[in-house]
Image 1 (cartoon, one colour):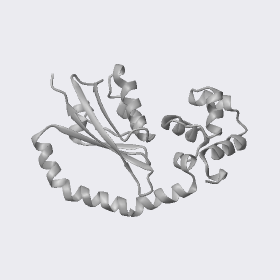
Image 2 (cartoon, rainbow, N blue to C red):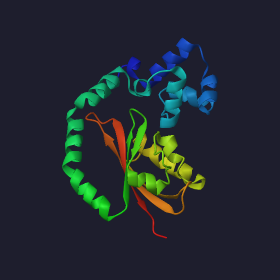
Image 3 (cartoon, rainbow, N blue to C red):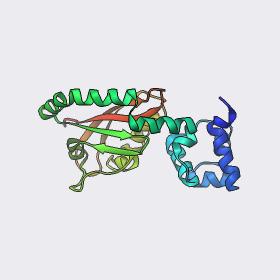
Image 4 (spheres, rainbow, N blue to C red):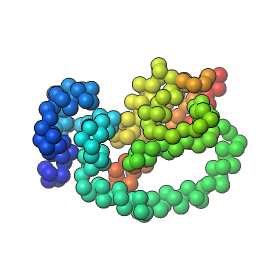
Length: 209
């Protein structure tokens, strides 16, 4: 890979263009200037930190992490790649079976579109998490708001491990902020046709007392 195509080179370019120090970026993100220096030399950056840096520089996080080719690929994915068409067909083919299964047992689902940073919850998932009458609309951080404070770090780390491709799936049990009881969340990453993470799908079930 050419140097100009790397995350480190794009970050370094932004730093120079904005005439900002590593320490200043570190204060924005909540890390040390040394950590930013490591990113600028090719070190790994966590998903949440990546999003914060991209927001600070007012750039797309996909471009910052993966470059121009990735932006083109993700744009094509929205208009319909083979993988996306296959996923949609699979969803349609299984819709009736899924609805029937969900009527028998209390299973909620959610779908996290990593590209658009948006999570969609099923009606059952909203009920299990204790979402109010206005429904859920938000991203990963909004979802974590329904996780009890004592369990929030654990659940957040499990999600980040999948987003950053350190793990293929997650399986966590936790208490809730807005309702009694505990739930179990099991999810897995879905990647595009060149292997980049694009979404997470998850099922939620109530834990018996």
